[in-house]
Length: 137
Image 1 (cartoon, one colour):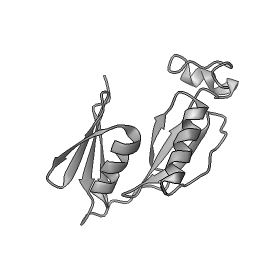
Image 2: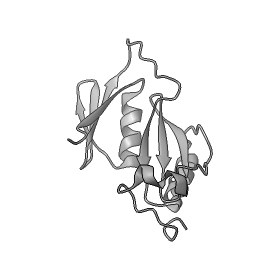
Image 3: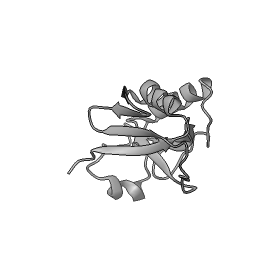
Image 4: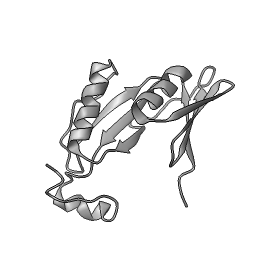
């Protein structure tokens, strides 16, 4: 089984789609009020939330993983420089460095890496990511 697609309502479909295109390298296709964002590994559907009463749970977010701490830091700096609303600063977390920000259209994105995950959490991610001390630098 593989992930086919994710679907999200947005209060600003165009801004949400533009964020995914600019920062997450998605390709945009327009259809009616929605936007279809494609990547080689899955699709994202962004739907107009106008007239709907969707409310995300407080901790709802989507997460992406980057290969290194340096790439997470670079993404953080790029988003800050571009005026994206940040939820957190860079966090050195036991399960890997990360930060949270707000995608235009009102939902949260987590950007993380598992390369620097603490030893006690490594079994959780075994086989998913090469976790070694030399790549955490």
